[in-house]
Amino acid sequence: MLKMSFDIERAGRQQTGLHKHVFNGKTMGTRYSAIIISEEVQPAEGLEEALYAAVDRVDRQMSTWNPDSDLMQLNRAKVDVWTKVPADLFKVLEGAIAINRASSGLFDPAVGSIVDAWGFGATSREPDVKSIGEQLRQTRMPTHALLELDPEQQAVLKKAQVKLDLCGIAKGYGVDVMAEVLKAFDIKSGLVGIDGEMRAIGPKVKNVPWSIALEKPDYSMREAFGKVHLQDAAIATSGDYRHWVKVGNRTFSHTMDPRRNGPLQNNVASVSVIAEHCMTADGWATALMVMGAEAGLHVARAKGINALFLIRDGETLKQIAVGPAFESTSSDYRSTCWI
Image 1 (cartoon, rainbow, N blue to C red):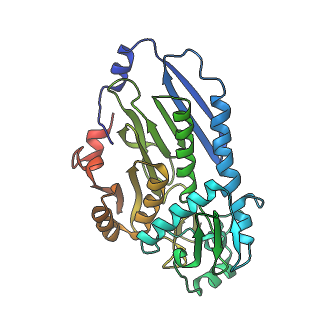
Image 2: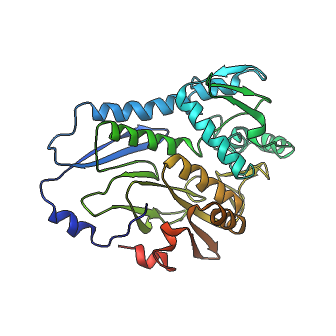
Image 3: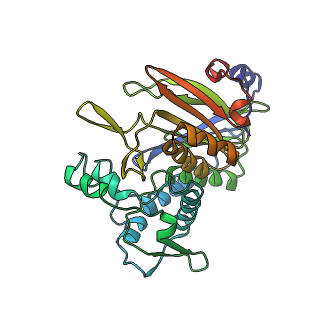
């Protein structure tokens, strides 16, 4: 549920007896954060440790930078052999394959080899021309046709040798497990995030939702484009401006297009998605961006996805909102949500 408010700070100041507690640390090559508003002067005992343990568990299971992670062990597993995996990894694989199927394969968790070839993975920081050529000659099948999952045994069977990369969905899931920690500690007001993926638990204060900045898709500097306000909902953004490589005069995004076996090339600068769970928002933000403006907008409308597309039109940005969470604000999203 998206709620709008333009009087956040004044409303907060009027409610006394509340305390803000902030936790943050390193995870998944970036940072996690948690903000809690409560009447307690001190945070609950064990909360900070529980938050770190939650994100660390996801990182240890799904990192592509740690050769001993459960995901990397699955990548090395033999074809046609069932491999048991931990519960969190299995849940993310289920979610990834569901979005892969629903997006006609355009959200692809099996692009690890392409990511590495272009220098965005753990094996290299520079594009490998030979490997890029090899990838371009490959014929790809959708991931849901290459993996079989057994929920009862919590096991995975690979039908072909693939390199899975869950970077397009794992951070969102990490945010969700942090939210579950807050709920386990009976916290009614909290905001958790990893990088740009965020999830709000309850309102910030009574009748006032959390205010979330959306980043302007700019290659050279970081600044806010606008804000949304969330209560009991999550938001994730996929963009072409944060991780990229320049080859000659061309800029290539870290987001891979399985149709091209290479980096995405369209005019979508970013897609933000609001959903109940951050894993869902994270995966669909990537999928819609890969689809491009026309197809992505069609799919978002057909599937009832709340999405904001920022599209490059020369030197300007065109914005198109889909779904009540964005459309209900105004046709001029920036002017209504900027505070």
